[in-house]
Length: 223
Image (tube, rainbow, N blue to C red; front, side, top):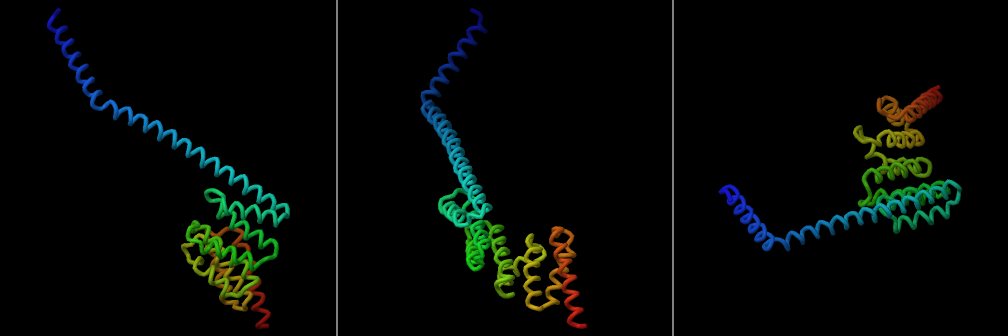
């Protein structure tokens, strides 16, 4: 046997002994770590399946409630939405609350709808965007059923230049001011909407109509 072959055999034996020693010392831990990884992966996969299944089920129930509302079955829709609010998953409970408030409004229960929207707006666990939208929805109802002060309490804070809901907030405030006979305030608010380059086109169109109406009303009053 050559020296090179002998040296290689010795090195292989040493490596084998070192590997055996390493395995004797740490093999149990390696197996345990591998088992933990497998269990964790299985658990995460199961959790993802569970949450996806719950979300899909809640989504199906929400769509079924919407269909009931669209078919004019308000009481059945409200019952379904209230059940979803109680045991739905993810964002569906708060969406159910918002839709239930709309159903109340469609039924002619303006006070109940405002109270429902106000409850969502006051719920700190709900997303801020949803809370802001609830305030806007309540403000629009109160244009017809409440006072300008009621509208301002819900929409004023959302009418600032940087707020994405400013156009809706200004429209509600403008309508309340116009109804209250404060034509100058109403003109200012609708002009802000009309002049805003990023305002939705339909909001600008409504603002332009209101500006024409305010102008005509002012001419009649001064004529």
